[in-house]
Image (cartoon, rainbow, N blue to C red):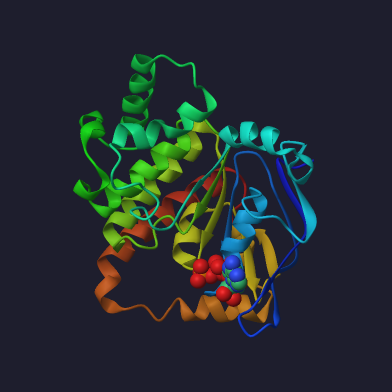
Length: 284
Ligand SMILES: Nc1ncnc2c1ncn2[C@@H]1O[C@H](COP(=O)(O)OP(=O)(O)OP(=O)(O)O)[C@@H](O)[C@H]1O
């Protein structure tokens, strides 16, 4: 049994005109422990809905999910809350997901307050400082508020908050989409280091193929709520089978020339990832 398994997930919404929309249409996939599955597809294809279904942040209309052998849909509310310390999410908009009135220390410590309420304040602060440093921030930032940090720093705070309870599975919902290209490459590098150092399993949502190529061991391609193709990243991205995946890959070649320098940094990441895949026997 894989670490993460999703079977036949379905989510329907009612649109404002009263029509039914099947945002996630019988989707299934598996992720092995320590791997990173990138879900790509155009805006509106159902990626974020799928991410939320996997963590049961929204209820599915059909299908099921198991994480490390636990049937997520079968959990009662209290059990689900307890389990969530091991399953975290980082959202796209760092500023919108951080309370602007709270100090960084309190934002990052929030999951600890919920999951380890008896932890002494001094120990809690030490854990916050340690995780801030692990994600590439200075522990001195604890007194600041989100508005005093750059976009990249804010997203690192979001990552620190997700990791403070030492989860095994992290959903990254377009975590770098709102950052400029250079900062994006640096945050992605940090996420990749954290995955390797901590043995994390990622579900990585993105509409950017280069990001997924640099970060993910496996790729799933979504269109109109359905999964049109999935497999090892080296297979899907080098010899795509579905016409839609081929379309996405050819669109990638139309790059804005102004982004070229930062994109080269991402390509360095791709090269490093490719080397490690070759070492793992996943080369072309
Ligand atoms: N709460 C909701 N009520 C009604 N429709 C919704 C709701 N949430 C999402 N949708 C619709 O479901 C479809 C899938 O949305 P979703 O956000 O999952 O796609 P996405 O691939 O993540 O897009 P993006 O990359 O733009 O975030 C879209 O058509 C969206 O408008």
